[in-house]
Length: 459
View 1 (cartoon, rainbow, N blue to C red):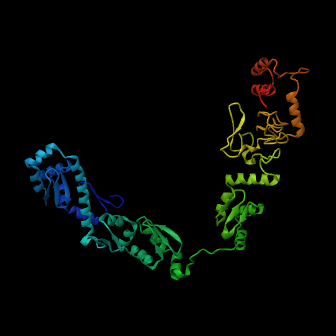
View 2 (view 1 turned 90 degrees about the vertical axis):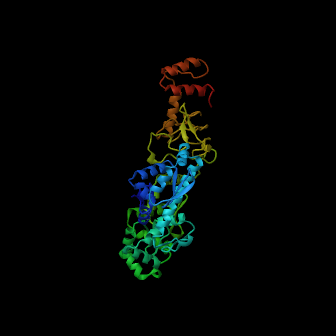
View 3 (view 1 turned 45 degrees about the vertical axis):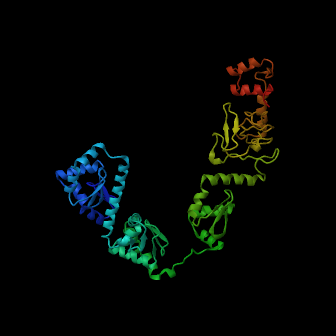
């Protein structure tokens, strides 16, 4: 037995109630399947081959001979299968359409057995072609619908006659409980939901809870139907009275201007441009500590301090440095950037930001803090880009303007004392070979790229 189903292994049928099982065990079809005689064994073989199909507990149909046999034991059926005409048809076999009829016959037998078992249930009325559940006051159109109703949680609760179930049903009749589905029961007094799952225990324990008993004495009229709406001043006073670390974080965010109090207790997060319908400080604090909000708040602060828009105008674009929490030395901190095969920084238009800041004065002007790996075409271009090289753009650490100028002078200075290295069109092949062999101090990749730039192949 599993999941409140009763299985008869001899007949290979499943029954949903104890009454159905008792009705099945008393039927002639079960007796044939369990009768230890030679005649019954021959009948079971014919049933297994699909030649015989039960139509009721005392009727069986032969699909070969197209006759119905009344029986109380296996002897009438055995006498039929020993006839010569039946044996001749059995040697030919069963046509395909008869196999489908066999399956439908089994379904009809199962439905008939269920109907006979339902007649023993005093909570059901299946007389005169009607299918009614008197316990739940439900009218079904067919035996299948009535069977589905019987397997539901509502019927199982109403049909349960235990003392615990009677107390729960009394609460349902008073309107304190409401069973919207077979698996859950809502308590209108406590504003909570209890799982039912065919077990009366959880809901029985709930109705004996002290708080539920107290509200039950007051009645439904004393329970507010809607949650009380507090004003902004009352909500702020409640927040200030909270001494938890989460409440302190929320107060700091409001003081910094990240959060704005909205009506009905909601908050508006300015960096994220989102309305937060959080009545408690804990979920609000989880939003403030999330990575998405941290990044949005950092970008919002940098934009607010700069007094200018991001990537706006010619020579006035602004792209803030990465947030401190991302550290240094990593890859490109901004979504959308990547490096191609030649270590050139590239940008995917569909990933995050439009590449409008790649003009003059774009990302990393070279002065000051220049993580200059961008494609700026003007003075602010990175030394590894395809521009002319920014002032201090090569330096990836914090530098001063003078240090940036010295870096430019090192790149343009002679390699040896009094010796000027040429990167023009003359001796181009020798310079490339020297760069690849590592005779000069610059890395081979940078050496070749400088040759391309000065020779006019780059811009």
